[in-house]
Image (tube, rainbow, N blue to C red; front, side, top):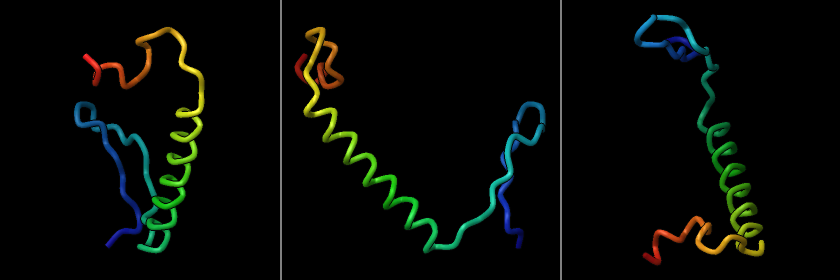
Length: 63
């Protein structure tokens, strides 16, 4: 089994990127760090003043 994953453009066959596989521990660490960053950003966005009335990203829920 290879230690990499390669993404390929299906139309041209061109290799787009090659990624090194990570173990379960590395994957969990990255997912947890991403989740923590999302929570920080969401908290920051919730505290930010709203401008432009219905430009709020949740405005579709009020329609």
